[in-house]
Length: 85
Image (cartoon, rainbow, N blue to C red):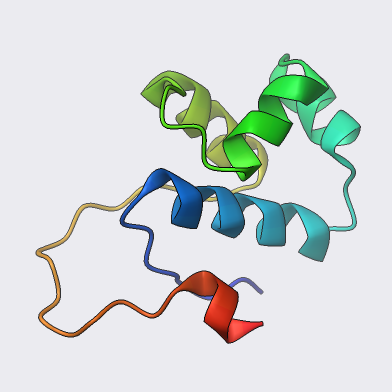
């Protein structure tokens, strides 16, 4: 089971996607095949490429059985995903 994580910028979102992929034991190539994207695109997403299109992110999230939720911004300082691992 994957916990909820806060992603406020492309790098944090990329780290969330990378960790979800790894938790499933998937390679970047397998995720690319499931989404119809290139492995290089998955790599760019996971490294926080800010030019990634929203529909591409949504396709990757769907393949990982994840969804995007919009909520009011929390008041506390976000914990960087890197600090959790």
